[in-house]
Length: 125
Image (cartoon, rainbow, N blue to C red; front, side, top):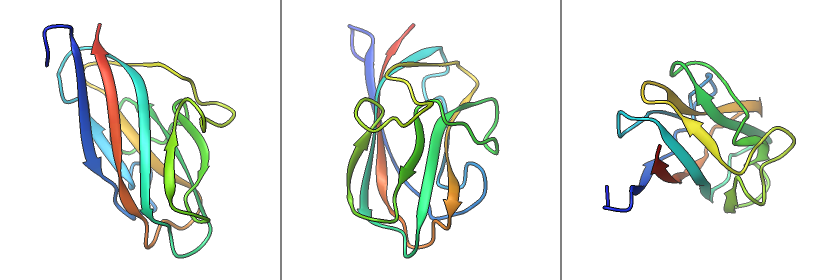
C-alpha cells in the first residue's frame, strides 16, 4: 500500500463453471476498499460460448454481477473493464468490504479453456 492509500492486485483466472469458479478472491487488504477499476485480460477465450459475471459477495461461492454483467469471454481475447464493458448491472466503482470476496462466475455457457488475469485497482476507505 502506498502513502496515498492506493493499491493494485493481479490474479489469474480459472476455467471452472461453479459460482466463484473463475475467480474467488478474499479482500487482500483486510480493510474496506473501493474498487476504482476492474480489468479482465482474456488471453485465451473459452472453447465454447461463455459469459461471466463479476462482483462482490459475502463468500467465495456466490455469484454477483455488480462489476461486470454478462461479459462475453467466448468470442474473442481482449481487455475488458467495469468502465467500458460493465453490462446492465455493473458499476464504475464498488465498495469491497474487508471480509468479502470479489468473485467471477460463469453466467452462461462453459468456462472451459478460459485463460487470463484480473487486475484490480483500489483505494482504502
